Image 1 (tube, one colour):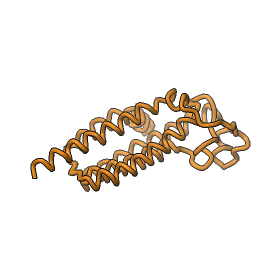
Image 2 (tube, rainbow, N blue to C red):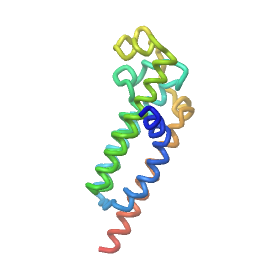
Image 3 (cartoon, rainbow, N blue to C red):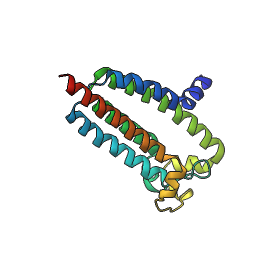
Image 4 (tube, helix red, strand yellow):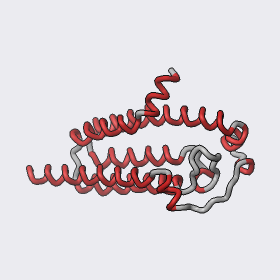
Length: 177
């Protein structure tokens, strides 16, 4: 089972691209669903940006920014983005596929990440998870450079590309009808 979890966690981006093609094919976006879904997806990406600007991956337990309140704000942000893309796609089947993908891959990623953090940081991570951020608190301001170093610019580009593809599909569908 651990091998399956590790594989899903490692391959979630590739699986996301494959799923994205299927979702685009199934999508029936309209102007209204694109605006509503775009707002939700943007909120998810804003949470991810905020988190990425506070995170020093694999080097410390982070307790600043959204990490004060959420153990995994990047994954929460991804889930919100996924909900936004499902709304924008305006397809129940596409939405169900997105939900299943997020449930399976993000659950695997969280399990893998938590095992790594427990092994690497031991009691500091355990204290953080218990809500004792004083044990690990490093006051850090948000940093755009840190967000870029964590690769969040690729997520921004990915969400923008998906939204542009959905806009293109909506425009194409409107030209047919």
